[in-house]
Image (cartoon, rainbow, N blue to C red; front, side):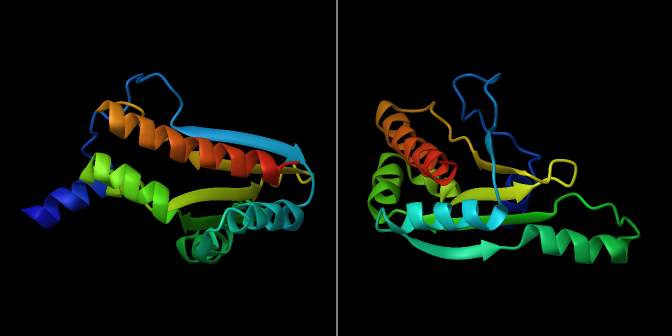
Length: 157
């Protein structure tokens, strides 16, 4: 039963009422003119300059290109697309002490990508965090979202 519930949550079949405002965008998307490698490097530096370690870089664009051919769906979605995963021990601790179910928000991730139809524009996005729930949980999640927003803005300078 537990495995089934986890699978349903991961596939989005169960939507928990985590947002106070259901109409709010789920993803924050920012963009700027530039080169993918430069923006990605600034994002990594912004993460590391805050004392965090990049846990993993998911090369989503490469995966989609490789598997698209195998699936008979070769349309290029991105020219470059990577997702940077990282965590803040202090913010994660605060978030999960406020509500143990907030584990679903960890690790944090920021996507850096370029669309083929806009080759000189780099997008940087992240999943918005729920700001509903208890006061302490909302405050902790708000601090994480501010961190993500600050990193994105620094990457796009």
